[in-house]
Structure formats: structure tokens, C-alpha cells
Image 1 (cartoon, rainbow, N blue to C red):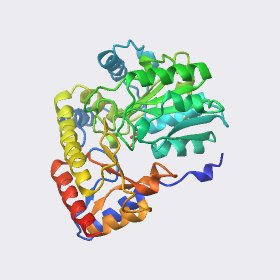
Image 2: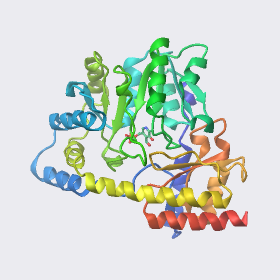
Image 3: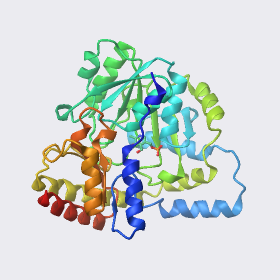
Image 4: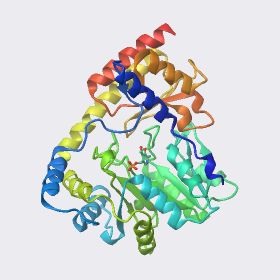
Amino acid sequence: MNPAAVQPFHAMAISRRAYALEAAGRSVIHMEFGQPSTGAPPLAIAAAHHRLDSEAGGYWESPALVERIAQLYAERHGLAIDPGRIILTNGASPALALAIAALFAPGDRIAFARPGYVAYRNAVLALARVPVEIGTDASTRFQIAASHLEALPDAPQGLILASPANPTGSMIDAPGLAAIAAVAKRRGIRIISDEIYHGLTYDAPAHSMLEFDAEAIVINSFSKYYSMPGWRLGWIVAPPGSTELLRAYIGSLFLTPPTLSQHAAFAAMDETEVLEGYKDTYRRNRAHLIGALPGLGLARIAPPDGAFYAWVDVGDFTDDSMAFCQQLLTDTGIAVAPGIDFDPVDGHRFMRFSFAVSEDRTRLAVDRFAAWLKQR
Ligand SMILES: Cc1ncc(COP(=O)(O)O)c(C=O)c1O
């Protein structure tokens, strides 16, 4: 339980270098962060412009947006969620911090998959809770399964799940989620379900953990499907009975999320055609990347059921993913995330591409990567 163990995101170092190279005139392809390159959809931007010109923008939580988010659970999952349980946050990151801070105690053990989103480990450590990493591999699509939870000798107090996940994009199907919920309930493990990549699935739609566990703590945001990462807006679905406590925490730590972002997000939620268009681009990028990599000697790729990532085993080429990614950037201008960000144990032989970029950039990246690998 050492907050000093909070590690920097190594992809940030890659990104800083990538921007320095770009400033020096190099052609760089940014695939290091999981952020859409498209920007907020046009109606969201128009709504923000309008509000900027017409109101002061004080502390505020939009009742209309909260209602609209509740409606999303009815549309996507057939669930009737009381809008009173939906609390707006400044993104999924503060939602996660709030959930950990308000609903778990210092010293509580919180489990999550390895590989997994780097902030899970760091947020748990920063808040003086204890991370429990569950090593996963291709046999469970790099996801946690009920059998992993059964196998833990001491049940942790909490479990963070993500389906689709970062860095793999892989998903847990409905029976898998139901089985996890059943074991978690029996062993007294509280689930935090990070549903930030919902909406971004390429085959079967994602299920909310709320379908299987009415007490689950769900976090989500406008950063991914809605293409609004810089607007810093997300939400938490408070478990029944926890709303007041979570509101007290958010009021004390963050007050309210940005007013302008709430107006914009409300408009974005009905801009389905544009958002599905963004997703179609990711779908084509995914097909191109996943189609090309095996021909380059990189056949071990996690199944990207959703999100916009390819988690690629580059173990035949390197056992130092950071050095590999640095060299790739230096030689080709392709910026990607090293596997060590997501998996401190096996990540030295993995890298993650984010294909939330244009089709042209994806094709160019594949061409440059292919030529580079050929020379190695
Ligand atoms: C799995 C996962 N959860 C949460 C976040 C944080 O997102 P936000 O921008 O909503 O804070 C990210 C960002 O990449 C993510 O990949």
C-alpha cells in the first residue's frame, strides 16, 4: 500500500517524443492514446457555441442529461434505472476514484485483470487500497472469468471489470458476466464495471453488469463512443442506497462537471448517425490492421471485439516493449503504447495500437510498420 508506487503512463513519454519529432518536421502517426481523433460530433459543438454565447455557466448538473443517460440503459439493456442514481462526473477517471474512495475502505483489496487499464492499479494504490492483479491470457481472451475469482484464496473486497477492455478490446459474454456476478455475490466481492467502451462493439453488443448484478457500481463517460475525451464528462450509476454518499464525495472533491460539456453531451447523445459513422471507420481500421498483422509475423493478437485497440504479442521481435516502441517511433514516426503500461509482468513482449484514427493514417501506419519489420 505505497502511493509512491504509482507509475507514470509510459505512453506519455512516447507521446511527448512523438510531438517533439512532429515539431521538428517529421511525419508522425499518433496511435499511442485511446482517444478518437474525430472530435465532438457537430451538434455537440453547435450546442456548446450556443450556450457560450447565451449563459454564464455556473455550477450545475443537467437534469435533462441525467434523464437521457437513464434512458440509454432502457434502450441498450432494457433496464429501468432511476435517474436519481446517475451522478455526473468529470469523466470515468474521477468516477473510478469516487467509487474506490467512497465505497471501499483503506486497505481493502481490489482485483482487476492483467493486462488492464493502467489507471486501475494506480488509482487503487493512490487511494491506499491494495491492488490484486489477476494474470490472464489468451485462453480467457485476456479477461477475468468466474474461475479466476473462485481460485483466489482470499476474496478481495472489490473487482474492476471492463468489457470491452483496454488494452485488448476483448469482451466477456453474457454467461461469463452472469457467472462472475454469481461468484462475486457468493464471496462478497463488490463489482465496479467500467463500461466506457460500450457502444463501440463490432459484433455482439456489450451487456451492462447491471443486467446481472443490480448492486454493481457502473462507470462510463463521453470520452470514447461520443468522441469527447477533452470535454471531461462521465457518470457513475450509484448502487441503490449509495447515492447520497457518492454525491457528498463528488461535491467535496470535484463540485460539478463542466456546464458547457453537459450541454454538448446532451446533444451528442442523439447524434447517432455521426457516431456510428466514426465507429464504421474504426471497424474498417480494425479489419485492415488485424488482416495485415499475421502476414508480418504477428499472428498472436487479442480478439478486439470492441473498443479501438489491437493488443499484439511482439515477443518474436523483442523482450523490451518500451525500447521496441521507442525505436519504432524513431525509425517510422509511428507512436504506439508499450505493453508494460498495461501488464508489468508480461507486457515487455506486447504493444498496443489505438486505431481511433483516420483510415488513411491506419493504412500508412501498416505500410510503414511492415517495411520496418522486414528490415529487422
Ligand atoms: C478502460 C478505461 N477506463 C477509463 C478511462 C478514462 O476515461 P475518461 O476520459 O472518461 O476519464 C479510459 C481511458 O482511456 C479507459 O481506457
